[in-house]
Image 1 (cartoon, rainbow, N blue to C red):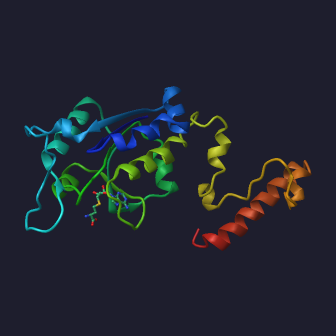
Image 2: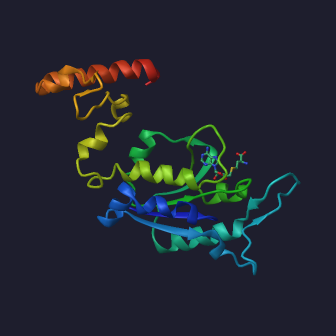
Length: 222
Ligand code: SAH
């Protein structure tokens, strides 16, 4: 999978891709991430990417021209499955959307900033608008990292034990069961004895019961 991220502040996010699973996915050659600084696509001599809103009001708006130039150049080089704009009024991101994105080959993620982007970009170039929740961030950079992190770990081969991604919360609409590691007795806090029993089938049953119980309690709508 190739992911192109367009942002006014790519430096904010570069570090996230240099560690842990996001790094490993690139080292294994399963994912390519390309950051694009919006300023590089500005033809303005001061590299300006924002301007005042028509109709007045507070805040600056990212202009059409640099965004259009960045997206058009990428589209001339390959086909994209989706051109995503991170937006508080977009479709709320969840595991099902992540599963479907993880099957794509090429994705563009456009991060807004300031007051947002000129609406004509959303109408004419964006194919999907994604929100990470009903609250407002200063920019789409963190949202883009959250989307990337969630989808990349679903790509087969990225996580060594593929079961591990499939048994996470929200796959099958169930939350994960409680998990424990050694020692089995820490300060008198005891691990449920069934997990030490060695009965694979009984352990699976117990984990499923716990998942159902926690889902009913914490996410009944699932
Ligand atoms: N004026 C906008 C908010 C702009 S916030 C409004 O009222 O809807 C600046 C940028 O941050 C947005 O362009 C968007 O790219 C990003 N952003 C803010 N909140 C977000 C969220 N919940 N999910 C995804 N992106 C978000």
